[in-house]
Length: 181
Image (cartoon, rainbow, N blue to C red):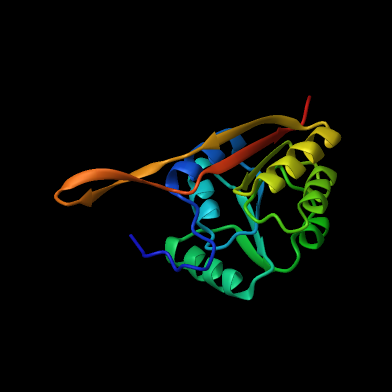
């Protein structure tokens, strides 16, 4: 298996990816937006969930776009496009979006507005700052898409003086937005 090329702020931990993608409910043929794509790991894993998934990965950091592009190539992610730019602007130029993972929270309300305008039925936002959590929940409620928030705190076993202790990872809030049908 190829090694993931890193970038600051990532990659998202496997446990968080698993819960986030499960809640996203990706379907075959969906158009998926990976907002604030970082290393592209979310997109790499999302591509395993559905056949013919069209991926738009975007980030406002050139290093992230470069890392995601290389990681997509290394991991054989097809039917994808990595785009440099401010996410709400990038989203507004897309034809449609079925589902989205938002890992970056810059301009979060504009990003959520753009995703809903493009028809997203499911949006997952990951955040670590409580102010961001409150802002996202309030805006999702305003848009009529708020479903739930899950707080996940994972710990990893590590050796300490010949025994094992659990070192906590940073807790993450996973906010779920679903278009009511």
